[in-house]
Amino acid sequence: MPKYIMWGSYCEDVIEKRAPYRQEHLNGLVSQKEQGILVTLGPTKDVTKVFGIYDAENEEIVKKLIESDPYWKNGIWTEYDIKEWIQAI
Image (cartoon, rainbow, N blue to C red; front, top):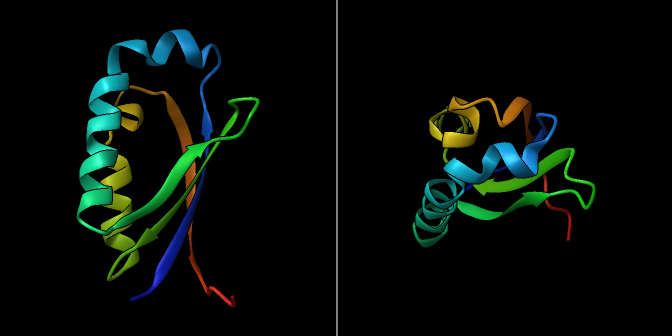
């Protein structure tokens, strides 16, 4: 199955602004992980960027997952880019 990486950006004051949506966001990620779609996802240490790796049939599935996430819907993630990734090792 193809792997996709996602790089995105967070809004300013993300720690405060994400609070109302955090549990719903985390619940969705756990569900994706249990389904075997999400490999990993998390912020950079300075909480300005988000990085994720997905195992999905196609890019459209990853796009739908990102755009249905409460962080995207509520402006916590402000932009993202998806690329198909070849895992060499």
